[in-house]
Amino acid sequence: MHEYPITEQIVRIAEESARNNNAEKVVAINLVVGELSGFIGDSIQMYFDIISKGTIVEGAQLNIRYIKPKLKCEKCDIYFTRPKFSFACPQCGANGVPTEIGKEFFVEDIEIALPST
Image (cartoon, rainbow, N blue to C red; front, side, top):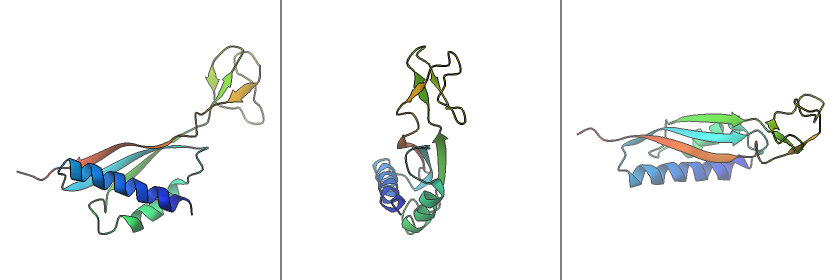
């Protein structure tokens, strides 16, 4: 349910971008969603289809690039994806600590179509 207001923002951002660039239509919106962001792509898509109806964004492709969470080894300073049932660094075996990687949520870019001349 919390995807509804964030999806409204996505549509507003795309509309504003299209208006500022004199676009005819928004073709695609590319999102980056961390797996720990708390947002679910299927829900965003469902709300997007509803909210974008009747706007310049209607029918645009919504592409979501998911980011896996990473831990950081404080001993050898590398980032790694947590192995199943473990926090151990694959290089040295020390425990990794959580990072901000995997919590992202942002509009990466917007593709628009300009009117033909």
